[in-house]
Image 1 (cartoon, rainbow, N blue to C red):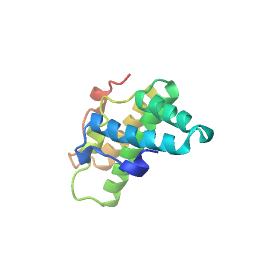
Image 2 (cartoon, rainbow, N blue to C red):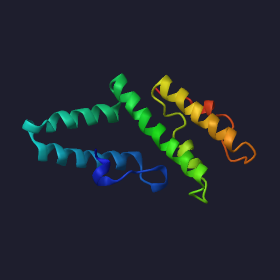
Image 3 (cartoon, helix red, strand yellow):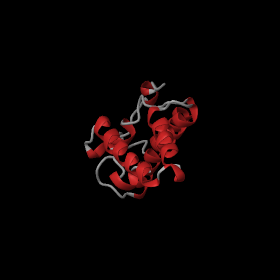
Image 4 (cartoon, rainbow, N blue to C red):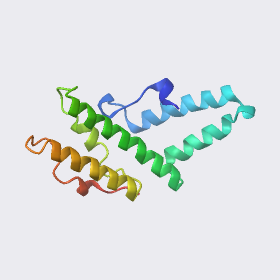
Length: 135
């Protein structure tokens, strides 16, 4: 929801995680205040904080889904030849940040399919699993 105002901040934007969080928090506070209690403003703010902080299994999965959508979009751009520059940064930015096993496994599948498609290209990370990490 905060992206509606601050935009979709990607790894190429050069915005720190802390600055991104603050910009989005300010936006969510404004939205919450505009909605007020009768329109669930406080609940929306609370759910956004739950998502950002990953305090529930659902929040962790939604956070992973957001990253999965990003790398799927990057792979789609590559497949369509939309970008002359490498989109490897999008994939690299997710390494070690998966919060669920399901998110990690889906990412592995996406990277595997990307690797197969670009097999002779040499631009695909060879061992994505090294960056598993996560909570």
